[in-house]
Length: 314
Image (cartoon, rainbow, N blue to C red; front, side, top):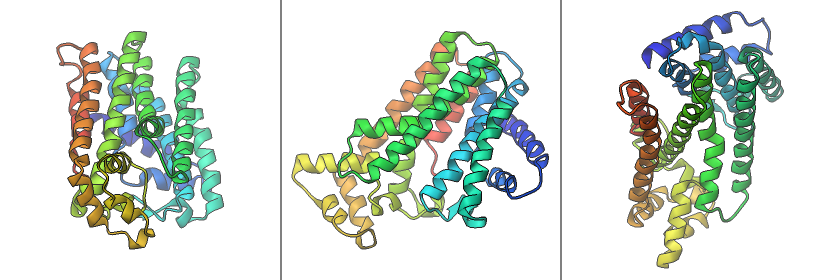
């Protein structure tokens, strides 16, 4: 992974350095320079290599994936009125909202400009890019609804988070000339990994060590965000006739006792159930790698990356 990340980092630096001057382009370079894992473009390069091609062949496609991802972050931060992104001011805070909207639009255009003209890759990219937007719309709609089911939540995170990981891997496989069957398998691996990744995020928000995560513990709970944990916790409460979570949600966010909510989730068995679900999703995803490479030799790096993301503490 480190080799692929270094290869991609150098490509991004060259691309950013060649951007024209001015406030349309400066936010792009600013956002791309913020510290981040760059998981998606790294996966594109790893998938390309997995199926026998030079990962350099997929650098532009990996860049397109990263540009699209950062375009969504730029606009998501505006929608969420977020002031910080990875510990630094968000683009709209550093410049202004109008500049952030326009620069984000331009970043999307530039993603297409570097993606290439392969109609098959374009169709895969378009499908998944539209799904990401649909996932964001569902996420916003859920904020206005009193009740959201687990199946609905899973579909939202599949669209908002998992499908772009799936697209990153599939596009890398396409560049290497992988068979349709292997494209489907690597895409399924990415989707399953994305679902497990998001659920792990939910767990870290509620139960992670703030000194490690760098975030307020239980921030999503305080805000009443409909995560897997809260949805499942409310379901179990209804079945048991208890009300600790509902009692806290009846207060304004500033008046909610997060420690009480976290304890309730533990007593309801939701923390353990979520951990089991992460393992189940991860196991299903890793099975797809086994179908691509039964010996596990060629997929060892991808397997290790997946495990590190799902077991992470921050």
